[in-house]
Image (cartoon, rainbow, N blue to C red):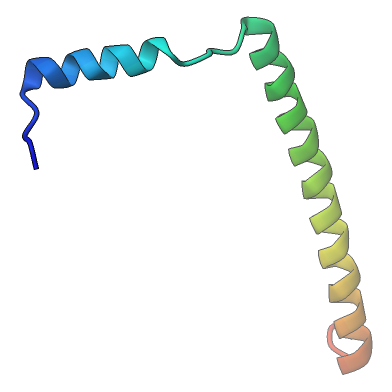
Length: 65
């Protein structure tokens, strides 16, 4: 296996980075907003699910009275 020197390694890294398609500022803002919105809805979903399960467990086991 051939060892790569530091200068050759840096050249290879620069070559690979130049191939990357970077998102535009607009694409980044839109995807960030989508992640925030889905995180909000997921947190509401799991909160409500937790409340329903907690209520059911209390009802079945008679806890909390």
